[in-house]
Image (cartoon, rainbow, N blue to C red):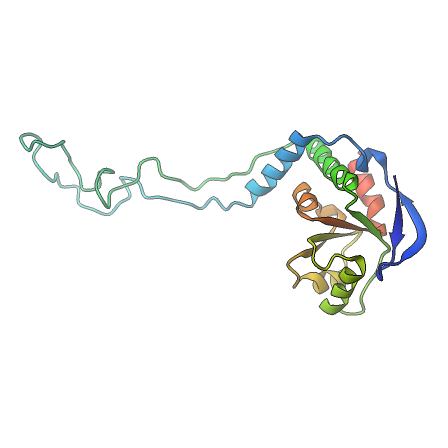
Length: 209
């Protein structure tokens, strides 16, 4: 598919680029997308939750009442889970929520995400640009020129650009990543993808393996 190239003022440069059909025009695999997004979100979890169980609660081990003759259930400790202040039964323990996916499935998921965005016409190709120094106002001007100031956007760079990254860091709705940092979640979480020309070849090279 052909997409026109815009400059950072939002104007047509008169050039067009050919996006690979094997990356931007495949039949999306929804299950692969689901698994990759699930893995990304699972990896964000710290898993440090912990509840004290019966053996860890502070309290006496004295038998609190005689075994028989009270008319109530027998009880041997104030740390019994049935009592207030007692231990928790099967409470959460520290654990890792991460799980593995093979590379081919993750690659398919990212291609599916790109194809979904392309089908929705939410991909913009921008010529490479830079700022002389970090400046949030300049980055906001780029967003306004592209009509994205009120939309969640993801800018994909070919290589790390400190000035562009720092210029966007204060904006909640916009983020800047390099092509090697792309994830399925990041692609789908943005309303619009802004692909800089320098990133296209790297994206297609990484996903066509």
